[in-house]
Length: 593
Ligand code: GTP
Ligand code: SPV
Ligand code: MN
Image 1 (cartoon, helix red, strand yellow):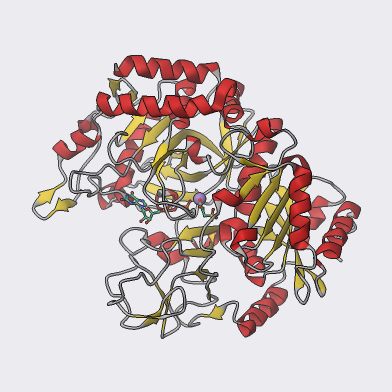
Image 2 (spheres, helix red, strand yellow):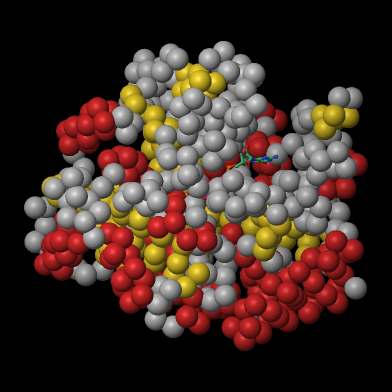
């Protein structure tokens, strides 16, 4: 036993009495214990050791083919009043949810081991860190939690007898899709997850705690839990500006967070520092600014599309101590996925374990295949990524996949307008969640699937947070995904996005002008530096100033359509839509008439 915390010990006993495991094992965080678990999981086939010369300390895992993404339609917020979950969350009454899940969990760990994982979201010593305990019957989960969070005895030492910890229960059960539930009880600091083994459903520190439960905690405690990357942008003088950016799943957070600036900028001394790639906890500081920490310790990143050209730093990060899930397995014990390089293996096993060759019509890796890698592996990890106080924010950036409507970049007029800009985010859906791909859906602040309470109250919380700080960050919106008539991306994206980030920082510093448009301030085309850009949309068609002008344009007709869609969406929020946000929509309507 690693603790004398009575409530904690009682809860572990209660959960064990229900799930009836053969054994209960406390995870102390030692390499010795983790090594034994790795060996055991290799023996049962749950994971496979990869080529130790090419990929030291790396492992391979396949999920059940029916279990490859978050299941939003089976994810519930279980608060006592249905109204408080809001119209965008699934809701179940707490007693009903506990009763239903108790049926599923009763005896579900018979013949299995229950692991008790004490973990911290945030560096253990940080005043902003919060503790969780996850109970699970999956070694894969233990090994992933070891990468994604800080686990073990030190967490319990810091917790002491406190009752401020999140109770998480995960069971693989039968992997029955019909009994798969991701249940959140914000009023009890509790999460129950059953019949899944996929990351976002079972690594309970991540979306379940650090966003859904934490967003509710933040509402009551005056802070914010957001689906945001964190990065530092260093200029030639050595000054570093930190920005947070919210994009929906699979819309480029990991790529932006660890990008390498174009050669022309590197020569001048610009650098990018990665602080986090998915989640930010944000608090008002004594200096009147907003300060942010990355509560995670690793990256659970999308593998497909990660290559030497698109994201060399991510590729470097996954060369050791990484777990690969649902990618293709090569005969030499290394891994491959679409977009890794232009030389697919002549023979491999696909993510379902079937023989695969480049002639196969199906993909070798699942589109939502992922790597789990320690943040410390990242070549551009910020020296301040574990700073207990976090980093001060100069800018907040929102963005999504919009084929036409949103320009490459625009800036909000002020905090209230910026909250509106975040609230009207929309994006085409991706493979990160089960369901149709490519459908436009409204996704305020990229939090639609992650907000643990009513979205109207959430928008109001954003407005209130702006009032708590005298020097709030500037707010921007970007869109790397404008398409031409052939359906090709017009903007080169990836490292070239730095050209836009530099404009954003210059705006924060008041060093550059802008174009006033109906939706906010866009960049004047001549203010986005294209030096050294070598990108061809099609053969013989290099990206030039005319293309830039096109993707910076604001078409009133598209925005009129969008405003109508926004009004319909806001209608769902009823009288909990803040009046300030309704006013901003009226202003938009007026501006695009
Ligand atoms: P989650 O981990 O699901 O939250 O995703 P994410 O937001 O971290 O997205 P990620 O950086 O993994 O990128 C997802 C996909 O978008 C990958 O296929 C990338 O190749 C692609 N992508 C990322 N950045 C860009 C960009 O600037 N332009 C284009 N065209 N594609 C991009
Ligand atoms: C996302 O879907 O936004 C992810 C992956 O970051 S998951 O952990 O599955 O949520
Ligand atoms: Mn994410």
